[in-house]
Image 1 (tube, rainbow, N blue to C red):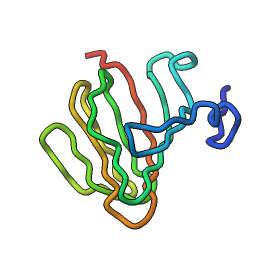
Image 2: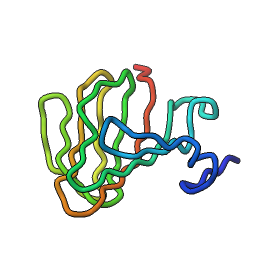
Image 3: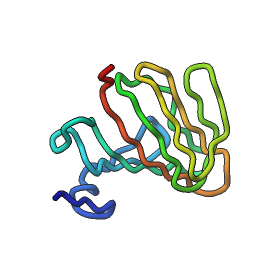
Image 4: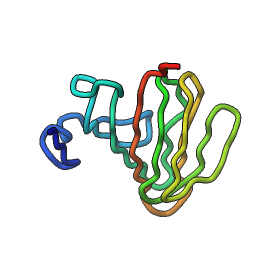
Length: 114
């Protein structure tokens, strides 16, 4: 069994600025996982944005709290707590916090197998 706490030393050591507008921590990565690339936690302060980028990974953003404007490829939609957003590998995507509270997300990423 592997347990990682968001405030534990292993997670704190991985803290980085995510795509210009958020702070992220990797909780589990491919050095431990067999079929996923990573499982991460990120926060985006009000007015900040995870800037548009492209990953070679299939991702899911799960909004824990807060929300904002999510863009995947050519589609933009408002997202809020409880929403899960699927991002196909190779699609441009971004998340702008348009609210007044911090947005927190879980990001799960894996290389597509189909």
